[in-house]
Amino acid sequence: MPVIECDVETARERLEAADVSVESGNTDHERWRASRGGASAVAYDDKVVIQGSDPRDLEAILREGGGRAHVYFDGASRGNPGPAAIGWLIVTGDGIVAEGGETIGRATNNQAEYEALITALEAASDYSYDEVHVRGDSELIVKQVRGEYDTNDPELRERRVSVHELLRAFDEWTLEYVPREVNERADELANEALDRA
Image (cartoon, rainbow, N blue to C red; front, top):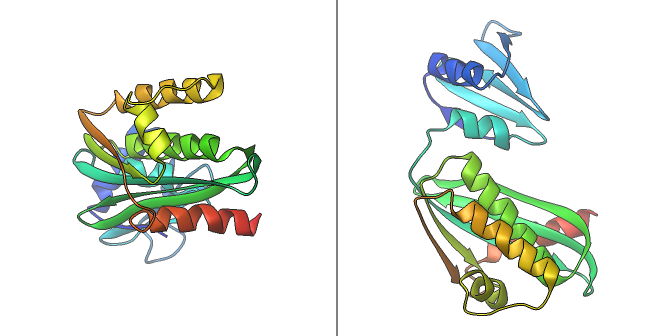
């Protein structure tokens, strides 16, 4: 449940500018409420609390844009192919800004890795970061995206193109391979999603 400390009237203006309808609060303590998709934002005196199944969209509107973020991604497949899931997180100097894990149906491990990378980059774009430093524990995916390896798999080539399109939205980006221990939280999120399925 994200909590954003901010000027709540400025936050209201940002939501209205993004075509999110804002209503009066339901209690004496609530200044206003807004909903979009599976999430709702409730404003108090100096903070907005976001609740619901998918808070990312509202949170991206309310947080200040720009700046630099570290993005971690991981895909998991039980069987190759088999039931698959993704995990990702965005970290700044303030800590974990956002994270997610979800199943993606049946996929190979490499397909899941690409899907995790794409989802993580979409989230970072939603938050309007200028600069992203992306890390994952799939050396193959990292080297394919950086152009050090090629792929004969048409589906992976297509996903690599999608990644490059997303990366072009940032002023600066890096992509590096890290050991699994460094990528532990993204790995946990993917495996927790598979365990829930």
